[in-house]
Image (tube, rainbow, N blue to C red):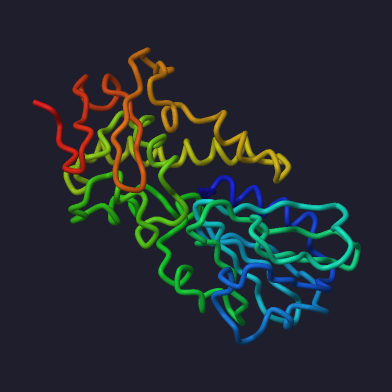
Amino acid sequence: MPELPEVEALKDFLAEHLVGHEIVRVLPVAISVLKTYDPPLSALEGHEVAAVRRYGKFLDVATADGPHFVTHLARAGWLHWKDRLPDGPPRPGKGPLALRVALETGSGFDLTEAGTQKRLAVYVVGDPQEVPGVARLGPDPLADDFDERRFAELLAGERRQLKGALRDQSLLAGVGNAYSDEILHAARMSPFKLAASLSAEETRRLYEALRDTLTGAVERSRGVAAGRLKAEKKSGLRVHGRTGEACPVCGDTVREVSFSDSSLQYCPTCQTGGKPLADRRMSRLLK
C-alpha cells in the first residue's frame, strides 16, 4: 500500500504535470471505484487544475473553480502517468484499469488496481473534508507544528500496542504497515509494547524515529517518476518485507508475525531483547 512518503512523491509529481492544465475527460472503467455520485465525474471536465494536495494517504486534485478529485489508492491501487494517452475510450474488462483522467495536452493518468478486493476509491466533492476518511484523519506527522509534546499527548492513555497505534489513521495520518515496522525498528521498540507505557525518553526516541524515517523516505522518493516509486520504497526498507534476511544494524535474522490479512517484520535483537515474538494472533512473547 502506498503510504505517506509515496503519496507525497505522487503529489509533487502530479503538481508538476497537472497544475495549469485543463481536465477534458474523466473516464470510469470500474464502477466500484466511484464512492460519490453528486457531483458527477463529468463536473471535473473543462476545469483547470489549481493544486494537488495530500491528506494522509489521500491525494486531492483541486480544480480552480470546480470540485475536487480525491483518491485513495488502498492496498493494490496505483497511478500511472501517460505522456500520451491511448486514442479512444478505454474498454471495460477484467484488467486492472479502473479510471482514466485526460488533459487537453493529450497526456493524463490511469488509476489501476490489482487483485479482487477492489478498495481503490475516487470521490468528487466540493471540499475534501466531505470524504469520511479525510475528515477523520489525525495530525500529519511531518507537519511543522507536530512536535514531541503533541506526539506525547496523542500516546497518553493509549492502551493499544505501538504497531496498531501508529497505523491508526485517526491518531496519526499516513503511516501504514511498512513504515510502522521501519519506525519501530529505528526506535528499537517491540511492536507490541503498549503506547501508554512509554517513558519520556522512549517517547522522544519514537518521535525522532517517526520523523527521521518518514523524512528520509520522502527525500529518497523526491523527484522519482511515479512508475518507479514502488521499487524505490522497497529498496529503502530495512526490515519490512525482509523476513529471513540479516538485520542491517545487528546482523540478527529478521522475523515475521503473520495475521489473517497482513504481517509485520522486526529484529529480535534490536527490538525485543533477543526474544522472538510468537507467530500467532495472540502475539505474545514466547517464554
